Image (cartoon, rainbow, N blue to C red; front, side, top):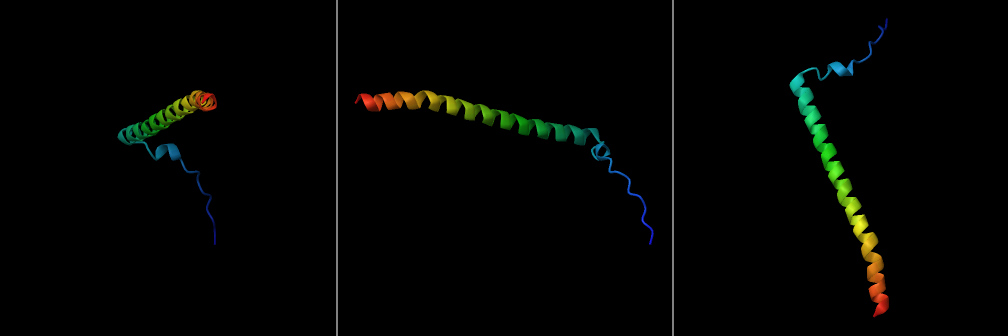
Length: 63
C-alpha cells in the first residue's frame, strides 16, 4: 500500500469566478455594515445610560 503526497489545497482558486467573488465580497461587506451599525447602537445606548442614571438618582434623592 503506497501513499501519495497530498498537495496543499489552493483555497484562492476556489472562488476564481469574478461574479462569485463579487457576491462574496458584497455579502461580507453587508455583514460588516450590520456589525458596525449594531456597535454604534450599543455605544449610543451605553452613553445614554451613563448620562441618564446619575440624573435619575439625583431626582430620586431630591424628592
